[in-house]
Length: 347
Image 1 (cartoon, rainbow, N blue to C red):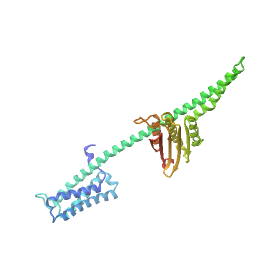
Image 2 (image 1 turned 30 degrees about the vertical axis):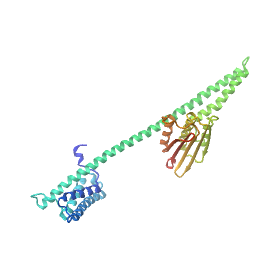
Image 3 (image 1 turned 135 degrees about the horizontal axis):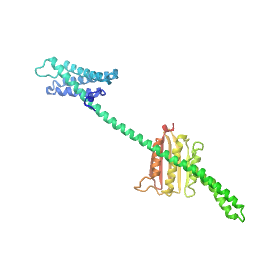
Image 4 (image 1 turned 180 degrees about the horizontal axis):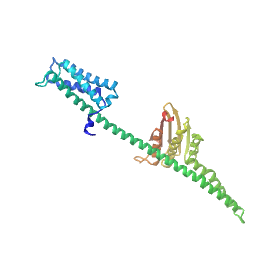
């Protein structure tokens, strides 16, 4: 800031100025403080602080617009200093300067109080401004992190959609073309009917089952298909190596379904790949606090000192987007993941 910007206007601080004025008034009369004069001096100091603070409070309460401009701000500080010094004059605790008349002592004390209050308010205001700047930078960093998280998830979903389109349009079309060519080959002379029939069966099974499942897993249609059906289809992809059981006792809103699906998807993947689990239980429930999602497996558990992988990053990112909290811990056998989505996120 430029030097003249320290003058103001700064936010008026009635309580802080009142307390400091009382302490200053008491300190300037401490040289004459005795047991006999202590009650009067302390009472006078409290009255000085109360009157000065009251003037600033009234100015902030009834002239909020005026005190945000320099003339009104300086007038409020001047009146607060005047009120405090009038109390000192009435209580006979005014500072005295050698060879000064009573009026000159009053004016000198008043004039000295004004810059004292201005400097104090400037220090408080500058400190608040620096603190607010740090808070604003922290908020900007949190907002940028949130945008990055959303961009990560959007990119992940876009890749899944593109792969799903390739599998559905190109791969499936190629498989159909292969089936047609093989059918024509059956009419050749001499055809190897047994071998060609086997190939046809394999290609047809791949087209109708594996590709369809891959398309659904990459980009599930959770707006038209309920979440439980999609999850059960996801769980069947791990059978028979890992049996997945679902207990869904909540109606998950459509805006939350994809996030819940992706979190469970990563939990199942971690349980199968890293934990070698044979069983996994998934539960979704609802109460007044919101949605609760738990995934418990009987795998090998967490490795001590292990570093989080991409799956953990995706879970954490989805939880931030959903406004959820989550925790993961090892059990006697396996790992449990608990996700809590607050009720406000349902809107």
